[in-house]
Image (cartoon, rainbow, N blue to C red; front, side, top):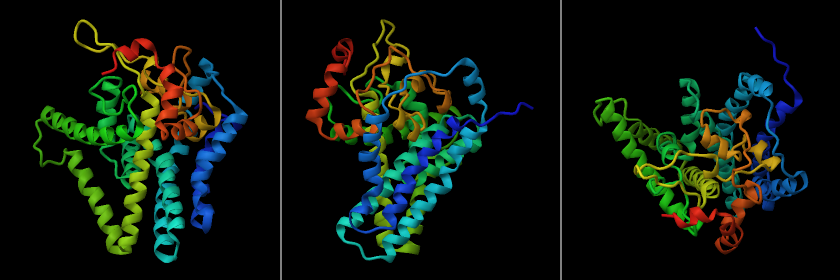
Amino acid sequence: MILYIYCVKDLKYLAAYTIPLACVISFMSNGVLTYSAVLYAFVVIPLMELIVGEDGANLTDEDIKNRGVNKLFDLMLYVNVPIVYAMVFWGIYVITNNSYTVFETVGITLSGGVVLATNAINVAHELGHRSSVFEKTLSKILLLPCLYMHFFIEHNFGHHTNVGTPKDGASARYKQSVYAFWISSVTKQYIDAWKKQNELLSRSRSAFYSMKNDMLWYLLIQSAYLSMVWYFFGSGALIFCVSIGIISFLFLETINYIEHYGLRRVKTESGRYERVQTCHSWNSNHSIGRIVLYELTRHSDHHYKSSKKYQILDCYDESPQLPYGYPTSILLSLVPPLWFKIMNQRVPERMKKINY
């Protein structure tokens, strides 16, 4: 058995837990500090990215081989499951057992939503691409409090096949605002998830009301989760859980927006779209965002080879680059005129002409 030495540099992904730690401050505080997780994610991290800068270096072949089988990287993902659920139920406790102002309630709720977005949906996304039943199950468990379990089906069977085409609800059109995208993406992806589920049932010759209808299970499980929250903790807790779930998946869709904005695949003479390439996703090498989001920002390579684990993703010179890291880009997208001014000139001209 080969023994691996866990280098300090491999432990850098422990920084992903700093967002839940910031949320701990939110839950233990009053006033403006209830926004601690929000301020950390969208003020502190962007400032740190300006200082630290970018790192576009790729791993050596030997490092890729060693990192690819190093279980430490998997364990750092698994730990997010108890962390996420601890934060959800702690949030329920503080909301239902304290008297907060509206300002403070919003801060605690936003902070809880940020944790679900970064440490639940983001990690669920990574684990959902794995081959083991165990890891796929953890992915679904993490999607539950986000109220976005259908993401597992739509993302893996729809988005990765249709990215950069009109068939994909998660690919933002050129000059489409993030707010319009929220509506089109959320609704289309949910509808497409049901369509994909029906296709899967048809292939396996299974009935709609069968054990193999995952979408039906997701609906039942999420309804049971919210019902139990309401039954045991009351309406305030229910509102909190629904709110942090909505915040988390809107955060996800904003990331989808900045990852694929304006990038389109060409339809060939055969009627099929060109193969997904590294030029069909926006990439970011800003170091802090890369670490905190488990390399999600190296999105070009992820779409090019979706089976690659986060710790071995590469950067390609031909990949379009975001001018800023993910947190800053998210903030920019919330101001459409500013986003368009900065990003429209970066969208390849050939893709502008084929925007559907």
